[in-house]
Length: 126
Image (tube, rainbow, N blue to C red):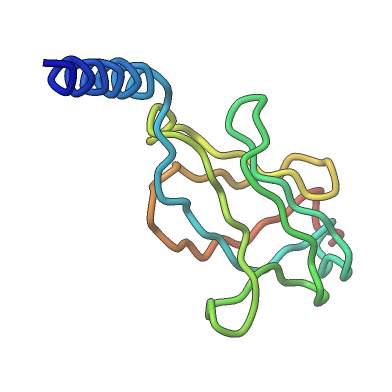
């Protein structure tokens, strides 16, 4: 009898804990970005910081290591800008800040995808 009572108690606690966890936002696969980056029409210098935002929430960042490009087309040869968020933000618009200035380009959050996206801020000098 005591064993059945303990088993039932453990089962109830597991169900309550599972229900509580289901209420929160579930993390999902990230989206990865890479591409060219320009400031005022010129290649952004190494050390430029790119931040991905959904609304007011920072979802990922990367610092460039090479002039004019962020991330790598191959995950085996370099980093990518990894955007991590939750399932309730699927389909939301991602904005990008290049050294704290908003880029002209945006993207839609699509979990599990890899996206080539060239970013630019400022205007090109003609």
